[in-house]
Length: 127
Image (cartoon, rainbow, N blue to C red; front, side):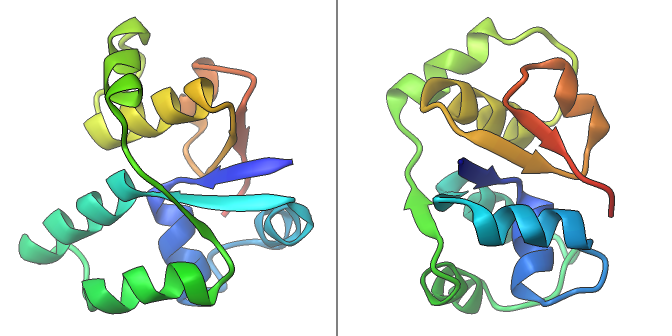
């Protein structure tokens, strides 16, 4: 299985947070590939600037490789695929992650049950 982590799952996994439950960790450990989108790094950068999260963006980027995760760039194809998504969710970053998951295809690992409406590729795990 190839997984794309949503931003919150990525952050919790790199912080070794107990808020990321065993089901999510088991899926990540058993996956053939685990991807982190450039869109998630962009989202974290914005949240850091607004004071909504604490941390160091350079350390977050380093943690991708240190964790054995792979970088997923945002392509024009990904961005254009957003237009085909129904308006179930208003967060532009989540919508881009969904578009990437569908385009690649990858399973999107998330804590947000609203995203499951988009595709069978979305895996919602409890926090």
